[in-house]
Length: 500
Image (cartoon, rainbow, N blue to C red; front, side, top):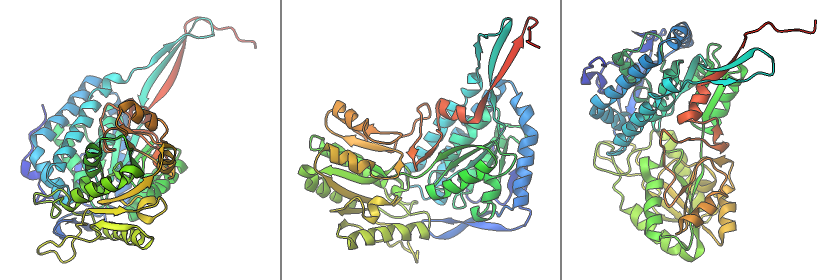
């Protein structure tokens, strides 16, 4: 059974001021801390260590030292510890949801979804110790037996994002550990608790051995390169923007580390004249405005056939204008953007798109909050008359913004959808499922959802993108392949004859 842990230890008011290295809670070597801001109130609610390169080195030394013994731990024991972790997430569900609202600005219901997705990832990971199976192959050499074993890579680096820090850390950390690797986790600076230190506290309570998980918080600009390029790192699992991902992959490549990169997206929601328009709008509202659009697989562009375009825009605008927006601590649908830089960039995209000739149907500004001088809540925004080359359409806006682009026929819809460097997700509403599937097959993306919207993730189904949306894959056997390697052992049972 998992060790019990005080729920107060998982609140925002708990002490989060130490790194977790080799099973010990230690201060950053430089002694400095970083303030964690609640994006709803703009107030500092906690302080975490400002890790240094020396702290990074210590974390990797601990992970490397612990890895061999951990890999030799029987699969049943590794599975037991992962299930302990699952129990702890269930036990502290409410505290974790509160943390998500405070640190990541996740509104009511979304924190529940994050915990559910995390538990799904952990449950899938619990099966991996028993899936570490190899192969047996005949040999062309007389008397030889070929055995192929699946073995852990060694030390896995996980660099997790701020938008869904809980489940996007879990989907890399827990499978990696379950497969016999040790991990160094560097969470995003905006969400160092739910993306990092929370996992350390839960791993400790679950009974994992020292050094299996090590967590270093800090500014990416200060320790990011040291993390991505460390010579003890065998795999680098990164989720974030394509721009940063290219730098991380390059740093990992210098060290010949395996790279699993889930990067940006510019996902299209295609709606044809044959679609159930109300269903398409329902999906479009969720796919654009869930978590304020801060989702790599959210709808970035609504592509709508001309004959139903005006009706779709009207319905989408009415729905968007009536979405409750405000503090993540209130009963709202749209909460705050994570920080000023993200907010200002997306509002600039909207302004530039209107200047280029689009119509602002609703939104385009921020929602005032009592007691907050500079609100981070962006109004749900709909733009019509948008072209694919306008700022809010050609860029990953990552906000509660719905640019609606008209198209004439299916060939044009597919052309518009594929007219981007990204290839992550997408969705199609074409009435008949078969018609939708035919369109889906023409889209150059790793994932497409027919009669739905693009925000879908299930731990037993592969999750990956193409093009500028990344390399490698997450979930199920795809990520198991990333964090393990095959080892060929041949056994010569009879004396072999050699030519000299």
